[in-house]
Every structure is written in structure tokens, then in C-alpha cells.
Length: 318
Image 1 (cartoon, helix red, strand yellow):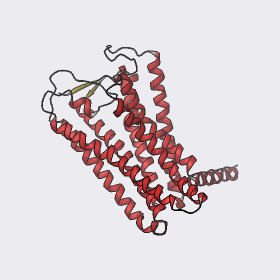
Image 2 (cartoon, helix red, strand yellow):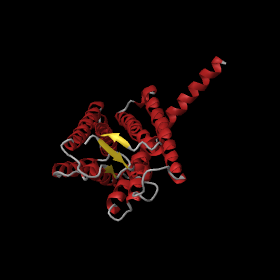
Image 3 (cartoon, one colour):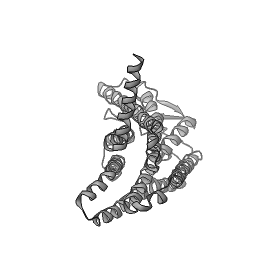
Image 4 (tube, helix red, strand yellow):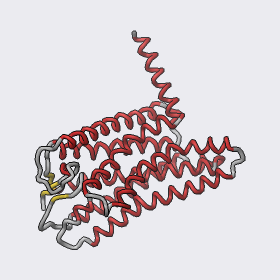
């Protein structure tokens, strides 16, 4: 099979069985909305990366992870949204099978890295709160960079295996992918031959990318809560907890929509499931830079300093 047909343009019509044709006005509203999300994601994540690059005070292990998160979000949005817009707005329903697999590899790798970055940030917070005197040693640059490198290799290995196993499949009937992009599950379910290896790697990928990170993050905050309960004054507890609010917001934005879809996916209308999954994929990259700019004092201070320096340079030129 060399060609796969994608029905994502139909997902917002409320009727997947309709033949392709001009999109009704609500479709245009939704995909124009996606376009704005993409622009905001690119601008926001680029701004966060530039702030960390130009401010040498933001070279701590925590901000190395924040930089990697912004970098991952930028690539994730750029890999997913333009192609979805191209398919949906311009009625380009067909995509070659090899390009579909390439598209899937980059999307799954980057979405996996979003979850793994949250794990690294969680590790950083638990070390900072539970072992403040040994934080520099337990969460050093070397350790954080090693964790990030390990998770990149893990994401690439899991996605590469899943995509590689798809090449052994053949399709004898429908080649219409019931998703908003070249998704792994909808593709292997179209196959005529044995898909047991594909189901197995899919289950392992969900465990490594969704459940294990979530369990680790929840466990780390149980430990953080216990550690905070031993702090004598309420003021110090609130101060320590404030350092976690940004990370907790990122965790909620990433995991809650996915868990809702997985929990109620069997009872949801296919169109509603596709729309929810698409929003769950594109919303975190847009909101992450907003959260870190407005909830992180160091980044706000650095942003003000950079803007002040730029204004001063402009006045000198004038």
C-alpha cells in the first residue's frame, strides 16, 4: 500500500461518513483557531528559549529543562499543526504512505518528550524541596542533561519501533484513517494481517509515555506534600509550594485532556474524540510559555530586564 487517505477534514462536520467537499463555515472557524494557536505557540516558545539563552542567570538545571520543554513544544507544534491545516483547509486528503510514517515518527517522538520533560521538572522540584542543602549535587547540570538525553533516546526508540512495525502490514480494504493525523492505532486497525506486535508496542508506549510519568509525578508530589508538612511555618510552606505551581499547571494541561479521552473514549462520538485529541495536542505548547512567563519570577524579571535594555538601546539610537 503506497497511499493512505485521511478523513480529518470531516472531523468537525459531525458526520464522518460524508464525502469530501467544501468545508462548512464552522470548520473554517475551528481551523483558523488552530492557526492562531500555532502562531502563539511559535512566538511564545521562541521567546522563552531566547530569554534563557540571553540571560546567563537562567542557566540552572531547572531552566535547562524549561528550555528543552519550549524547544520540544516548538517542534511539536511545527510538526503537527501545519500539516493538519494543509489537509483540512485545502482538501489535500491524500498523503503518501512513507510521508505518513515520517510524520507519525516526529509527532509521537515530540509528544512523548513533552511528558518526559514534565518528569524531569518533577525530579527537579522534589530534589529542591526535599533536599535543599544537597540540591546542587542531586540535580546537577550533568544529571539533568543525562536525564534529558536518556528520555530523548527512549522516545525515539519507542516511536521508531512502533513506526517500524507498521511497515510489515498490508491493507486490503479501507485506507481511510479515522484521525486528524497519521495516528498509529487507526492505521494498524486497518490492516488485514496479524497486528499483535503493533498492539503490544502500543500498550508499552502508553505505559512508558502516559502511565509511568503520571505515576512518578503523582508520587513525587506525595513526597513533596509530606516534606512540606514538616516545615514549621505556614509562610515557608506557601513559599515552597509556589515553586511548584507552574509545573502542576503544565501537568494538568497535558494529562487531564488525554485521560478524559481515554476514560470516556468508548462512549464519545468519533468526531468529539478527534476534536478533543487535536486540542489536547496543540493546547499545551501554547499555554506552557504563558505559564512559565507569568508564574516564574526569574523569567518575569529577566524579561523585564531584556525589554528595559532594548528600550535604552532604542533611545540611544534615536
